Structures are given as C-alpha cells and as structure tokens.
Image 1 (cartoon, helix red, strand yellow):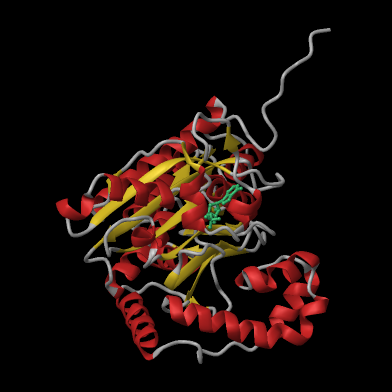
Image 2: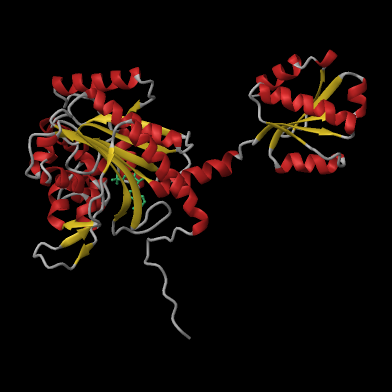
Length: 427
Ligand code: AMP
C-alpha cells in the first residue's frame, strides 16, 4: 500500500467549491480599500527573524512560541511571517516612503503562519486582510476612526451583522508602563492562583494575563476593577477625540478597559472585533496604533495605525449566520389554483415587488400541497393564498409559514393597500 500524504497540520485546502466565497471577500475588500484610498502592498512571506523579534516583542506569544523558522543562509535565520505589520513597516522604511509622502495608506491580503496548536478557527496557515496607515501625518484621531470604521465596514460588506467592536486606550509608552505597574499591584495577592503561564507572564508581559483563557485567570481578571488613573491627560484627551470621531461617523463601539493587545508595539488606541457565533476563537479582527515602531525599526519619527481581520474566521461567521438564521429568501409566495387566480396572483406579486418586497408565485397551477412545498423550498416567510372562494369574496388569505397562523385580507376593487401595509408591518 502506498502511504498517502496529508496536508500539513493546521493548514487547509480551499477547494473549488469554496473559492468563490474567498474571491468575493477579496474583491469586496479591494473595492472598499479603493474608496478609502488605501493601496495594495505585497511583502515577502518570510523575513529575517529579528524583524519579528524586534517589533512584536520577545515576550509575545507569537515570537516566543509561534514563529515558524526556516533554515536560511543568514546567521539570524528567517521566519515565515506571523502577521503583516512588521513587514509593511520594514518596507516603508527600506523604501524611504517618508520622503515620498506624508501619509502612506496600505492594505494587504495574504497568508500568515503561526506554529500554534490547531483548533477550530485557529490554523497554522491562515489568511488576513489588513490595513496600515503610516506617516509623519498619521497621528490624528480621525485616522483612528477611519481605520476602525474601515474594519467595521469591511465586515458589513461581507454580510456580517453579529459582531461587537470593543475599544480601549493604552496611552503613551510611559502610560503603558504605569498601567503594567497598576496591574501588578492589583494582581499581586492573586499571583499564586494564576495559571503557571500567567505566573511567568507576571513580570515579563502582565498584559497577557488580561486575555488568558484559563478559567481561574479569567475569573480573577473579571473581578479586577480597572480605572484610567494610569493615563496621562494627553492620552485621555486623545481617546475622547477618537470616540468623538467614531460617534460622528455613527460607528457603534463599547469601551473595554481590560482590552489590551499582546504585542509590544501598541500605544494609544487598541480595538478588537468579536463575532458572537464563533465560540472560544471569537476574534474576527483586531488592531491599534503603534506609535514607536517605525523609529524602533530604524525609521523616521512616523506614527502608524492598522488592523488585521482573519478571513477563515469571517467565513466561519458567515456560514454560522446562514445556518442560524436561515433568513427567509422571499417575503411572499403566492399560490393559486386556476387561470383566474393566476391573474390575481400576478397582480399581487407585481404590487409587492413595486413596494420593495421580495415576492414570487407559482406559474403552474399545481396542487396546493406541491405549491406549499415549493414555498417551503424557497424559504418564503408568508404564503398568499388566492383560491376560488377568495376571488369570489374579494380577499386573499395570508399564511405565516413559521407559525401557520392564517389571516384574511380584503382586496376591494383591486385595492392592495391593506395587503402591502400588512407585509410592511411584518418586515
Ligand atoms: P492577531 O494579529 O493575533 O490579533 O490576529 C488578527 C486576526 O487574525 C484575528 O482576530 C483572527 O481573526 C486572525 N487570526 C489570528 N491568528 C489566527 C490563527 N492562528 N488562525 C486563524 N485566524 C487567525
């Protein structure tokens, strides 16, 4: 027997039947990025390991545990990219973009690699849609709102509704230091109760304790009362301005004081978008401002903000939303039994469509059973019955397909106003 070869653990084939969903997400993304004036950038799939170590931080899980390293000809070695920001910033600096434009707005679509323990929604090769705005002019609360709004609008475009935007501010690098001191003080007496990993994180990267999935850790974190005493006046004002800009663009958000991002480079605004149907791996995307990173990697004094959304999670959420809601495809399906009824049915279907309702009818006078099963297949919310008695009595019967409740509606002198009104009430 020849041994079969399987795909590597934590990777997945995207089969022809699924490719159209991917293409639609990619096309919709490109269209929207164009509206926001973001240009596509394509960086290599692997970089010097040092790039990720210096940008993401030695204490982050991504660098500590998840970098997939390649044997290279350089002493430092190479690693497959675990995320997009570090490469985009490296490219921004290397290409001297600060001398060419005051604000560079980039987007990318592509595969990322992390050596994690695979589970639903967590892969070793996954795909992200990301955006980064970098430049000498990048510190504006309106740019924070633009980036956040762009992430939200992308998800809306993909047809997702069931998600929540959480925002927070970490403040400046000094505020972040103060925040970690506050956290250490507040968690000190609980330190021994934390999971082993969090006990290790306590000094190295206390922020990670806040999003530890361990039950005991999350209970302890749940009881923490976090104020904003660690924030400087400058950071508070900036965050107020960001919230004001989000309000002015009617973007709904929730302030979550315990939201932090595990990577070293974040300062000021951070945000996360979670999908309600996704279970434990519920982050659809996340991002934030990373003030010091460009300089830290040897570049100019530029500020920056960005985000990344996970395509696999978006597709999971889309599929779940479809399963869960099984949205009615039709507002109305008209069933009828003879030619006379069909004439009336056609009038009704035309009126409903003129009024923006999704309606269809049976074009063959089949048995009621057959027509009802057709209505079912088409996932109609309501069936409009136009039978012999109804025509005689100048009325139709509406049957709600979910509850089976029936209601008679008068149609005198071909006046469909009452019927339309009923449908609009149901929408
Ligand atoms: P992060 O850089 O970890 O905040 O990731 C941004 C987004 O990418 C997350 O919100 C997820 O949607 C997605 N993502 C991150 N890691 C994975 C993974 N291992 N598998 C699938 N999606 C991921």
